[in-house]
Length: 332
Image (tube, rainbow, N blue to C red; front, side):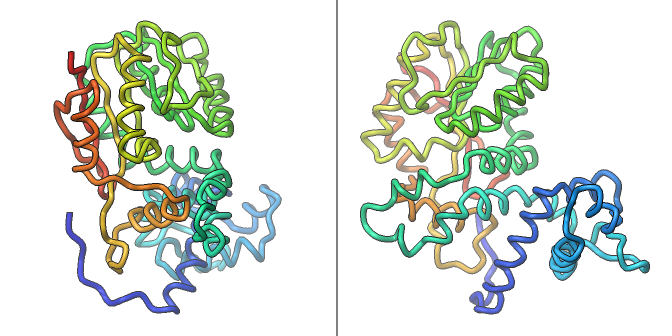
């Protein structure tokens, strides 16, 4: 994966980019982007009145987006329509929600969390609900299409999602495979609450179970019959190396009937000083450094897998910068 050569970021770009990130997050969370995507137009005065918003604030949010060519205002001055870069906004807004809302306290107190021993304090301040929503949003554009292709030919009766977040992945699979059972596990209470509600709203409580659990140490024997296990993006939380090897072994013992483990995660890009770093990479590595979490390289993952009860059978790149799916099968 390569990046373009661009000029170093200026302080003006940094300041205005921070405002843009906030405006994108607000537009996404308020439903303004969805309104434009579905109806291709939005009367700001009506939208503000119907949603109990300040028109002045909404107008400035729209102005900032318009400055990025994501939206445009028509001749009446209050009707918003998609701009030339609206598709880019729609497909990438989840990354901004993930960074700006999901990690807001960490970004605001970076100087505090850069001090030795404060990383765990930072990790506890993440907004699990916002992160779950954000991962769902960008995942449907950049992860789910690849995941669908990978799972299309797999035979299974019961699948478990370690780190299920909003639950959208198990819900999608449950709709695709009406005769199958699913389990979603997540350590974040906010994500579990979000996923449980989503499962109920989808009418799938009879086939989809959401469990609050430590995905690095799933309970042995708790979910018999699970023959497919997948995990997307909590993998880096398993490190350092010895802990990762232990966790991979624990997953094997917790799901002895599993014939395949699909482990999807973002790996280290080494682009922290590159102004052309793609969306997500720099924010991912920056926030995790503040949480004092190690981000492994593909070689690190291969070394851990080689010492685990799993064998690396294949690898598929995701449409997400520096991210892939490791296809693991039981070694014995």
